[in-house]
Length: 148
Image 1 (tube, rainbow, N blue to C red):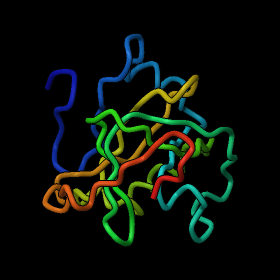
Image 2 (cartoon, rainbow, N blue to C red):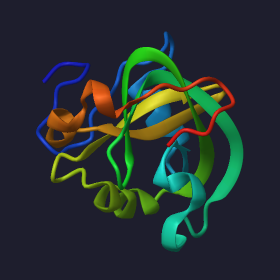
Image 3 (cartoon, rainbow, N blue to C red):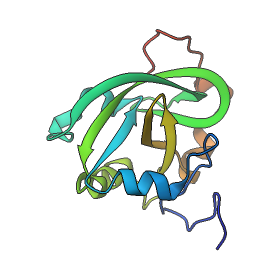
Image 4 (cartoon, rainbow, N blue to C red):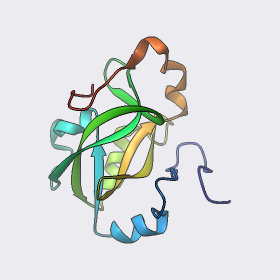
């Protein structure tokens, strides 16, 4: 298997980010804690899922945001600004977050991106959500607006 977006369905995939940001660098940085960019339901810590995490900053990524009713979905293709919160979390929480986001079922994929100075994980739309990413569910955002 080569570098890039290869991977099995439901597994974590790597999104090639800005120059100099490599999977190895993110993994070394995130051995004990990791940064999570939350643009949707995780922005406000639903049900205490982010217990033990610390909100460290806000940030903006470029992509396309969709409103799927009960939750939003992000794709990193597109140039709309999507606002979110950056959390620093204990590494063991990744497994619970993957379950919450439905990565095994293909609802979301966890990918690495850089948000400002922070190497972050973010959950983006997975293959099972593809049929729901329609023009009428797209959210047009501007910097400073709340994202879904």
